View 1 (cartoon, rainbow, N blue to C red):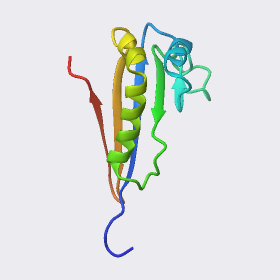
View 2: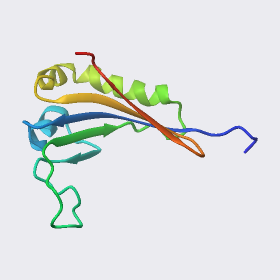
View 3: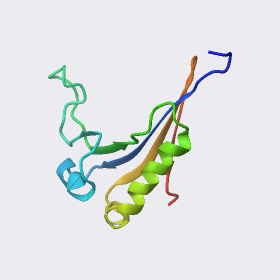
View 4: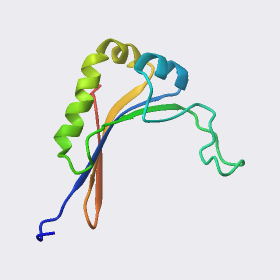
Length: 117
């Protein structure tokens, strides 16, 4: 490296719901990148672990981690625009946000963006 630190980025559209099961979210939005369902074990390796109280559906951007953060977000905005009706229908029964991660050599920063109430 030339002394300039290379950052890496990640962004995901996330949907959490305590009243909709994962199959409902998949039916509305398609296959996720990551997910879990209500009742799934928090730690699948431990049978005595807690059970999840909400369903989780997440779509990660396909941009390379070294691509600028705005490219990651633009990809998710394109998905949201194409699924506007479905997302609007989920709004009353789910929490929807965009997770953004910035990974540097010595520190990691993250933020979530959600629609104001």
